[in-house]
Image: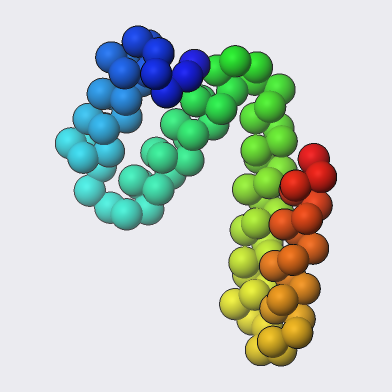
Length: 90
């Protein structure tokens, strides 16, 4: 599915926005909905690519937790640079 396709414009996007603004009230529910729909959009062409996105999401989450706890500026830079380079290599 592409951003400029009819299925995106007349099916995917309206459902996403309707549920996001109409049915979900909490920020956690909205974030979960956007995450789920991101996986659906990304996996529309080939569901195997969702595994790559899940790995990226999980690693970014763990790194974010470490960044929150780390006070060393040099360690923070390393925690940002190396995972970013690893994801670019994939």
